[in-house]
Each structure stands twice: as C-alpha cells, then as structure tokens.
View 1 (cartoon, helix red, strand yellow):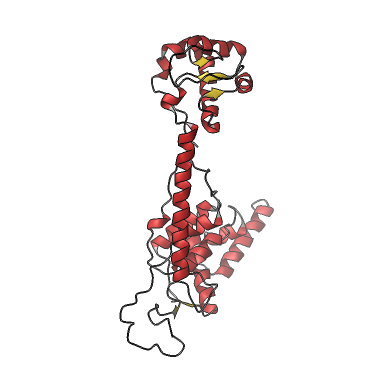
View 2 (view 1 turned 30 degrees about the vertical axis):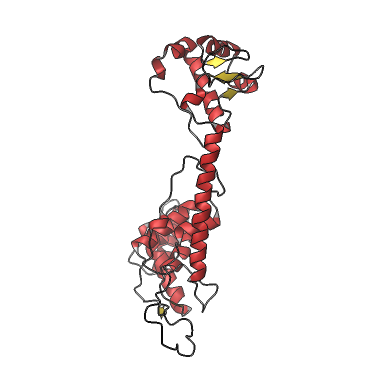
Length: 308
C-alpha cells in the first residue's frame, strides 16, 4: 500500500499548531485512511465523525488543513468535496494519486507474470524424462539470483499473496539452464538414451551429502513465504540426515539433490519449544534412542515436581 506523507517540519507548522495536538492526530489518522483507500485526499464525513470530534474538525477547517464543500482555495489540486465530506489541503502535492498507484501496481503485477511465465517455460524445457513427477528444478549450483525477495511499496497487493504456492515455488526453485548441446551432432544416441545424450548423468546420493548455502537460503526463504519459522542449524542437520536416508532407501537417482532438499526442508515441521521433539534435536552427539530416553526422563522429572 502507499505511504501517507508527513513533512518532517509538520510538528512546528503554524497550521498544525493552530489545530492543536488532538486536531493533528485526527488529520494524520484520516490522511492514513485516504492513502489506504486511494481517495485522492477526500475524507468522508462519516470517517471524520468516527475518528474525531466536531470541535477537532472545526479546528482543521479553520486552520486551512481541511476544506469543506464550497471552499474557495485557489490551489488547482484542491478538489471540491461533496456536501458533508472534507478535502485535505495539498494532498496530491505530496501524495500519489489513485491513478498513479494503480498504474504502478499493474506494472509490478505484469513484471511478476512475465517472470513466472519465463520460469515455467524453462522448467518445462528442462524436465526429467525418467520421472515426470520429479522436481525439475533440483540441480545443484543453480543461480540464486531469482531467489532475492523484492520489496514493493504495494506489499500484499497485486495478483499474488504471500502464501501463494506458485510464487513461492518460482522464487525458491529457479529453473536450471538448458542442457548443453555441444558435441551432440553427428553421433547416434545409444538405446535407452535417445534424445537425452546431452543431459547430466544421474547418480545416487552420497552418504555425506550436504546442502549448499544457496539451498539453505532458498529453504529458509520458502519457509518464510509459507509462514513457517526458520530452521536452526541443529534442525537443518536433522532434516539433512533424514533426507539423505530417504533418498538412499528409495534408490533415487538425480543430477543434483539441492532442489529436492529445499522442497523437503520447506515442508519440515518443527516441534514447539519444550516438547519431546525439541529436546531431541537439541542433544547432539547422542543416538536417537538415547535422545528419546533422555527426553522421557526429563518429562518424568517435570511430572514428579523435579525429583529424580
């Protein structure tokens, strides 16, 4: 949403002083309302009565901060309000108009649509033929440029919400570059690999595999977009061990496991503080069964009033 602009010298402006602190509070609050609802400086009478008193409104009008219907202000941008409404003097001099805000939001929305369409197109061109349901963005070393969050002044507006799945997926998993076609001409691909000679070789996950720093940043960003809390270093280690074990058990072959790990980490549920699961994560150097027994012992002590 746009911001309502207040000059840094407003605290000592003669009109503000004449309006008193209560009048200035009403002026600021109604200015925020006008900015949020894009009224171009019009303050509906019902809003003025809801936020302030009649004497406060009268002081704003007398000070020249507000105009009533039929005012004679010579400023060309001071509109004429309807009977019973008010207009904030010089509002459009310092604040954007409804048309300007709407045009900016449309430009930002169009940029998002084009960027997402490009990501989807690249993902479709570089998909994994062996597994149509596999994560097609899971190639390690991919660029993290598109993972940066953009700060728009129209946050929460536009065509996508903060929890939008497509938006989250596009930012968290940028598509890998297209496979190189160099050296592929003039050679007949062997049986079972026709049309995929230039694709990266698929392999099983290594026992000591670890996510890259880009993978960790992408997972934390995706969790933030989905409204989930960030993973601690201990929780990231736990998630990685579970992920490697599952990939190995399922004999999954892939060119890279970074994107798959990001998806896994994004969906990981964290236990609330003080729970058994939380106690287990916070005890490094012990087997899981030992951690569970230690957690149960602590629960028994708490139930017995702290006695051993």
